[in-house]
Image (tube, rainbow, N blue to C red):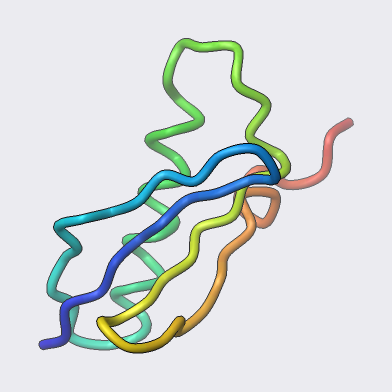
Length: 76
């Protein structure tokens, strides 16, 4: 198990994940990142999430990034 952190940002704001979560592999980290995106976009606020990104990192390095647009898809 590895402790990873899911920081979210856009060009104006950064939301730091201070607690993180233990994951067993990259697939689990990816699934958790997708879940975070889905939970944020389901909130009833006026935020435009298309330019946001989840930065997945361990205590030393960034592991991967997941743009919210990857989960949202293209606007119609």
